[in-house]
Image 1 (cartoon, rainbow, N blue to C red):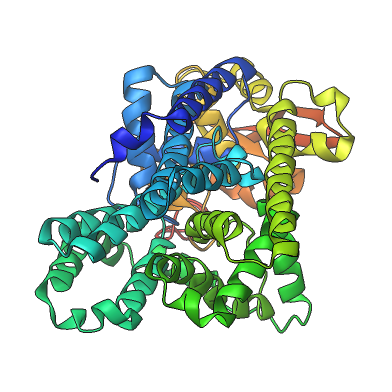
Image 2: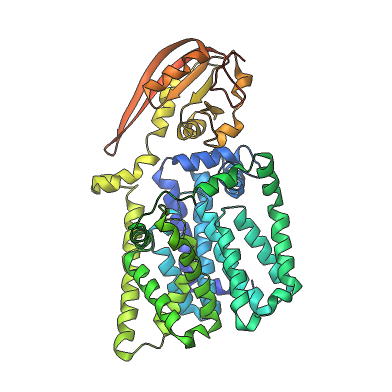
Length: 499
């Protein structure tokens, strides 16, 4: 993108550089254990493929690159979160600076940085940091392609969108809304007759085709999992209110209120609609939010799902608050409210970074946020002390399987037993039928689970129980040893009694 690097030679660029250094230092110093999702994606990265049970492969590829070069450590897994999260802010700054000026770009980046989710995604490596990276980059390249009308720009945009689709299915919303904007944009109303757009679509299709082939070979498992997220769970009259409440939480209430107010102002103003940069920003933020909103009547919408849509909304908000033609008696009010919202977000971000450092100074309700990041090393130590050489490990939950794979010294392959349907990537990988005859260490969440597994072993006995209180919650695990694994219905879809 023309001028991206030069745009970073500015106070905003210095701020982003300092922020990146602070984030990397934070990751290195806190010693926060991997969450189950992070350990799960790390386990994916040891088995590179074009697809996985619930998500495309990009997160596994990225983690594989960093752990291969930095080692299998918590720091190595999380470095890409800090890098991609900071580049996400850099692209927001560039978009604001390119469409308007550096002031708009700086305040847009500050507003984006000062949100709870942006803070969390700067040190927790899930699929969202790379998605935000590709989404914000696509916003910049998409505008450049619409302005310059060059083939190279559309081809580059196709590559970026394809990478986003290989990260998370949400990126499909970007493609749909972008094409819709091209269609309704007065300057580009005839673009669907131009071959450059179709070249972009061909590039996207070619790059994601290996993932499609993988899904075909695996019975469309990823698409089936995605489809479950859009299935109705009933009619919830209060669903939209819960959706708006949660969005206010992840954006911060003041900034979210200002965004809704700016959307409303844009819709009511014919003059603003004729402003091409503003219409682009509005379409790429408000339209996908409007598309998701009706789903809240039918099911709970996870708070992080719409988060990429706000990327362009930060720029729209910053531009209209700072330079909008407001009545004289309200212009200063809106600017001060915006500044207050950013300051509030920064304070919340500071608290988020402080919770892992000094959890004891916070209320128990906030300490519980660390529950899923705690206790896994102790569990692995307990399993390691009771583990015999050459025996395999079978866990009853994919969370246990991934955490033990990461924290046991030899990073073994940990299996999960078959429950009758595919519940995780482990059910796709598991080949327990080939492990018959081996001794097994069973890691179970509930003692009663052992009843149905008795038929899988010649002999079975209790090894011990591990439990630990973590921030007011108890995690408990039962450990059993099974002698000589034999055929039973829990070894995989092809196993059955007596086979």
